[in-house]
Length: 405
Image (cartoon, rainbow, N blue to C red):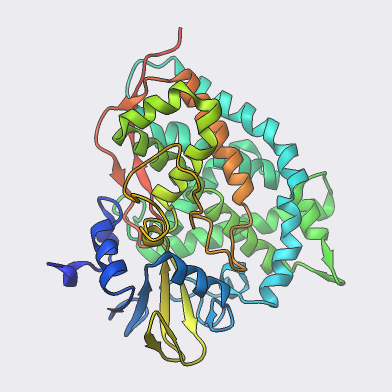
């Protein structure tokens, strides 16, 4: 492949026009476990894993491919983030996951669903009568995840946009719009969010409510409770994972419908039957999280490639989700695709996304409103992609539609 040496997965500008799928295709077929040199992030480099079944093998074998040894991101961990589930292996990960899992039980999600659907209606209400260009990201897709996080954590609704700002600064540190101030601003945002989380915990200890924060600060498992730092780090993880990923999936899914108008028409014509499969296809197509890092703990091999203890390795979800060994015609966007065992929520290992069911409820609620009430929604300008090595995101997506009367 010409120009392979120019595709730098550590450079946020590589993703200025979306994922480099031609590069992923080449890697999957020619070098499914490929060494990516790097002098900046994760020096001297890291392995890139692109095939579906290899990603699953890595995710399931946490003893050989550790999240805890050096963290799940290519960037160096900040102090305190070693207590984040993302950066832990069992049994520490299992303890923390079991403690916070009670915030995502089917009963809790069923209880939230009416509020989520009502919030989706109100969000569309605010734009449905407009006869001008609407930013789909800031006016539609960003709102619902923020409302849900506010609902989960008992955050005053007027504070939800502080979470939006904090998560943008943390994820978009290298983005020309979100990243003003760079890593220093990102670190400051995380400290502000930690302090806010601590204020939530302190308030619930003084005045318990029937909400998830009260449940978590008082939760016990085998006599253990979440420490303050663990709770604060969990709020940070929820604010990013529960906000950025769902927001960008909704935005990316809408863009996919714009780019495939025949699939958009098909979905508008039969949303009741096709919306569940369409949501899974959006998840496969968009893959809002690009990668996670693992550290090899013992000499081994993967796809015939020898790996040494201490090597860094990344599992590339966007590449795995277009593996032709698993998905027929993988570069075709098909709202009726079934089966669709995508890896947008992880590779079936211990780090499978705890909020997967909640995210699907949000996505379905939002698209249900949009498809019924804004059936002719269309692009009104060029999308602006987030420049991030981690998140496949869209900063702005200008749209128009026939206003409701």
